[in-house]
View 1 (cartoon, rainbow, N blue to C red):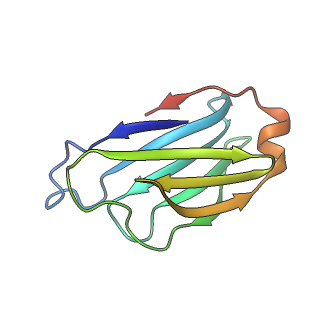
View 2 (view 1 turned 120 degrees about the vertical axis):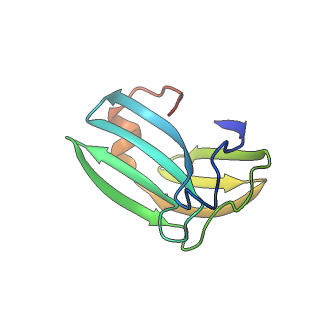
View 3 (view 1 turned 90 degrees about the horizontal axis):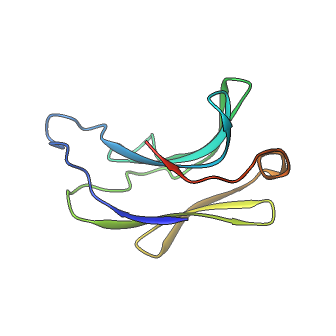
Amino acid sequence: MSARVKSAEDLETNPGADYCLILGYQNENNYCYTMFNSRDVLSAIFLVLHGERTELANVGHNTFTDNNYHLVEFRREGDRLSMYMDGKELVSATDGFCWRRFVQRLGVF
C-alpha cells in the first residue's frame, strides 16, 4: 500500500506532526500501522492487539522535516512488514500474527 502525502501542519508549532498507514484492520482494538513522524523517536511500525499497542520496529530518526509531498509505503512480504518513504526502506519487522488473523484493508488517519 502506498500514498503520496504531505503534512499541512506548521512544523515549527507542531513538531510531532505525523501521517499513518493502517493495514490489517479488524476493529478499533486490532490492527497494524506505520507512523511517519517529524520527531525523531516516534516513527515506527506498531501492532495493536486487544487494544494494547506494541512497537514492532522503530526508525530511530524523524521521517520528514518539510511540507512537501512524499511517497509513503507499508509493504508486506510474508511475515515481513516494511516501511518506506520516497522509495527508501526505513525499517522492517517480522510479525506473523497480524497477517494470519486480520482482513487486509486500507486506511489512513
